[in-house]
Image (cartoon, rainbow, N blue to C red; front, side, top):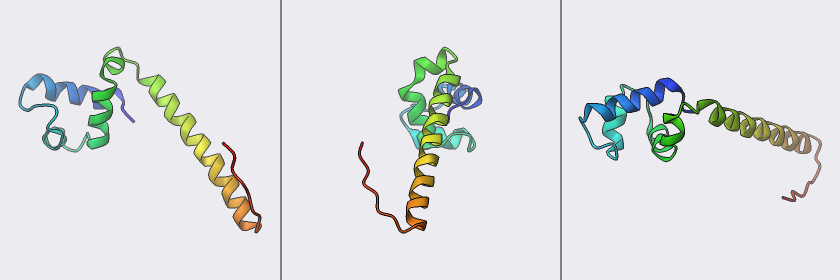
Length: 90
């Protein structure tokens, strides 16, 4: 999840001009562990949103996805623990 701190770290490296931002391993190294590959790719993809300060929307989407995954996992656990068979229809 990208927060303001991670975005600011990315922009700091970008503004320093030390490396090409597509050299993701170097960006990760220069961040001192603040950024990972997924963070860099996410920032590249959503740069304009983050530049506007739109962190909350992305965080809320990730929270909703995580909640949905948790519910699905609980349903699967219930089915498995009760020896039931289920068909998933999407």
